[in-house]
Image (cartoon, rainbow, N blue to C red; front, side, top):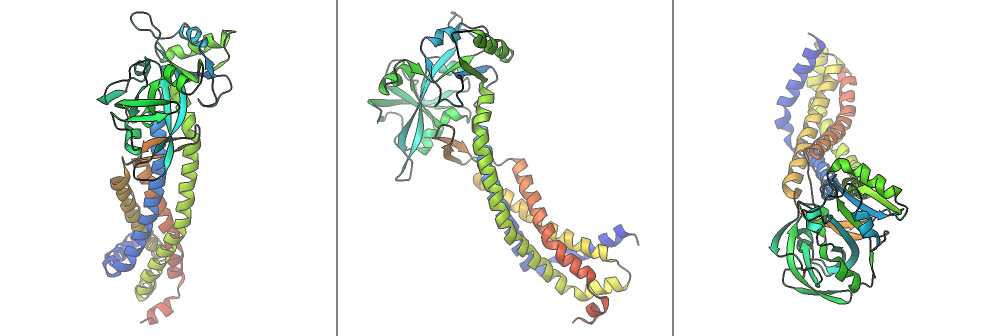
Length: 396
């Protein structure tokens, strides 16, 4: 009999005996499922944060900041620079010739969190009248857009769900101004849904910002116009600005938190994995112990050590596969699409996001489960293969 045939025969015999060891096998499956569930859950936070930011970016939108700024909070642009930038090459215009730009201001306000006694930093963004022309996925789902020049605001759907007191029709006080909430909007799951929008001129007055903005968003003729637009601004001696594609800007903003959450997720999974490995070890040692005479008999009639080791590993990894699949399915059914919020370390405000359990994360969890049970099955398999045949045949 060939080696492959021996492996297949011994493995099939092992798997047929699984129902007799269902209790210990269940322990291993549940242990791996728990590790996988935690790993996928934590990684889905990073994936959701990435999706919220990167879905917000567009290749045919440029964001202009002060030179040297890493984010909007550290940037500053004066009013006199807005027409200079707006008249540059590559800027899209309305039929009447008006450039599609939005001078924007960004402040942070305290808003109570729903269901909690604490508050969080919510982003209050001042935008220009054409902000909706730039963020083309923006859609009002309740109420109306604010009237320019008034102390009215519209609230992103994510912010409305996470914070209390942001219902349409309510009045809130931020800065030196009472603001009336007149609408609620969505942005295709993008970061704007975490924000509250007001007229940028009114927000300047409420927070004594004079004529300063922090960023200028510009809709370009198309994505290919970006290089010419950036080159024109770089060549203008009146300007000292940083120009980025909106998509690149948001990808950079998400990098730090994604790295932090992913590292934490794998660190937790590694610590929990130790327990899962011991569960797999215990399961496979019990399996080998209950089949001592069976294994010795196979060795006595000519089966080699390799099929024995392979059969134990296959059984262990099957349990790991089932556990990984179970953990991934539970994570998907229980978490995918669930909205939450976390701190955006780039601007120290809360950003709402949806847990995003992708097939890649589920497969990563399953692969990790297979690795854990491979480690847990290797030592018992080697021990079974090396056990003396005579002592195995004498076992009761």
